Image (cartoon, rainbow, N blue to C red; front, side, top):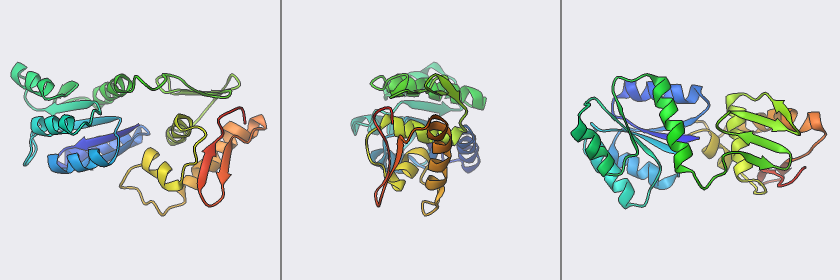
Length: 225
């Protein structure tokens, strides 16, 4: 899951991003509404955390322009004001939910996950490729009925592979989907995590479903492997 955090207060943006990354999500930060429009136009986010009080374009106007541009990622508005008028204004511009500061990070995370599930109705709730089964809601992976224990980042990477089973994904594709723009993309981190995934989803079962495509990247075979 990839989230765009639109927040001009550096400390707040950093805290939110750090918390999301700790939970295994990829998070990018835009300090203004103008930059948020650029980020959201360049990448399909699973959810957007949007502060109302921004320099230049405020959150209401940013949300309105996102919708006008055909960007329908679920938007969670953040505000320090808990008035009915503000909530209505946010919803009228296309926001999906509203959270008043100060808030507990656990509530922010729960609302984001709920919004992402709602906004991705076209995606299956449970992903299945051959006998490999991934449940995003329960954070559970099984192969041939056996539960696999993955780290948060291994889970995120496998989810990317399973959503695009049969496709060849470059290292850049994988970094872009499972990490974020702040990550050092010259690192061999993708290769390391692919090896870890193979050791958990393939080797114990005598499978070869996660393939290396020489000179191109990796592919999860769309079958039993």
